[in-house]
Length: 125
Image (cartoon, rainbow, N blue to C red; front, top):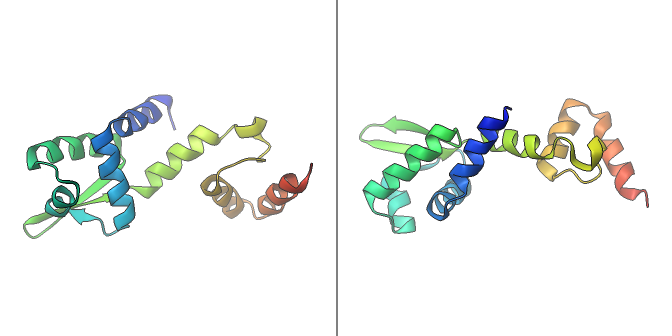
């Protein structure tokens, strides 16, 4: 990930309304919610919601799809995983001692021996 993309994603979440929208979409899961449901759940005017969803979409944190007359929005979990991995890639000087769960899971999936390494480092005083 390039630093510019990380800055864009962090900036998108650095606003209260957009953070509330993103957290609601994370809660909704991969199916997401339609714009009307988001507006109702968070008590946001449609024009305001549209502005914030556009910002989240441009940053890559939210995806959208149309189903008949409705547009559904969903959190882009891969984009958030990428951001978290970027923020923590050199954590603890790259020794994986204190990686967040998401980063550790990605590392363990990529290299099964990494899971044992992470556990053994946690047990070391």
